[in-house]
Image (tube, rainbow, N blue to C red; front, side):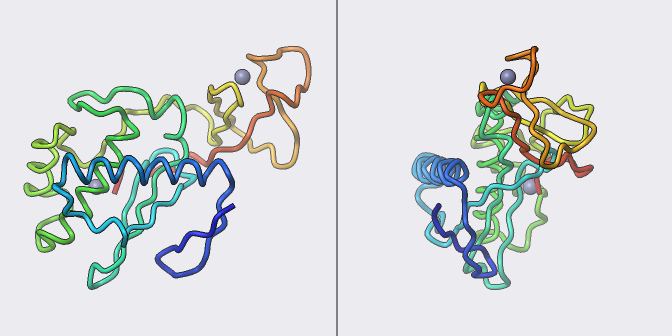
Length: 196
Ligand SMILES: [Zn+2]
Ligand SMILES: [Zn+2]
């Protein structure tokens, strides 16, 4: 567990898995800052946090003087769903969403008066090789409302939330409950689409 500062300055405790995801996001962002943004992004002022959202894959918030940023990336992307390619982009979905939010950070600093997904933003995305549109989602095929992940890596959706009931992945062990394949809740599928 490691404390992270949210925009509200409240320490947030992260599970070990989330801490690893956040560390990975930060490392990717540092690399992108070097090869896509000419080191212009103030990443020391950016907090990266996981979110439980499923369709709104990324978001960014800042304060009025752009001195602090909170980028949230869906926990869902810390898995096979993040590896999938995105049409019209040279990035996989995980990097696409991260780059999308980083371009917002860049725009807050360099072109704060431009519309959030306006021509400035779209041209910047295009020049980077990302998909120039507001919503980087590939439509995830989901029928249930709750997304669960098996330790083996695949994801399943369920209409009902299990709560404290222990349920394991039937694909890995069709017989009975098996703690080695216990399904863990990733998040609730929201109605919002894309990234902000
Ligand atoms: Zn499984
Ligand atoms: Zn956006």
